Length: 113
Length: 111
Image (cartoon, rainbow over all chains, first blue to last red; front, side, top):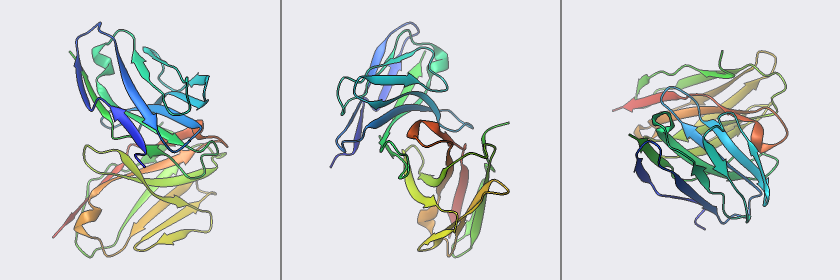
């Protein structure tokens, strides 16, 4: 099994550009989420989904959109990139109960100049 | 105050040493607890869940103290390959969306 696959691994954007980070999982997990990780801070939840067609905001949702049209895919869209969005982004999936923790994708390193 | 607090370290220990990390959390209603390991420039990976009775997995022992709201991770007989950042994770509720991550404790094991 591939687990959680994220693309791209690296991206440089100019301020104001938009882009989509892709995330796919093959474990039939109902729960998927996006986190950002910044130096000295824990992972912070951007958006999450508990199933196809259902999404909700996390701690830091501003500037990001998500959709969940299938169980497998959960793309993250940056609407108008800002330097403050320079970060490492991780997609994660897991069972709804949360009892067994998450499986993470390998991350996307995004730089906004 | 952060909801999940960890000493950032770094902890520098020789091979074979025993090292312990603590983590405190502020939400007394938190329901499940985990330790994750994150290697440099890699994704976090689940190391172990933490149970109220304490649990052991090889050289790793995790403890939970609900009264004092802290969890701990003990690593015995440290190996060079244990060098990583260890993340404390607390699930505040019954569902996955209530996970909160500590900023991590960095461990370097030296020959």
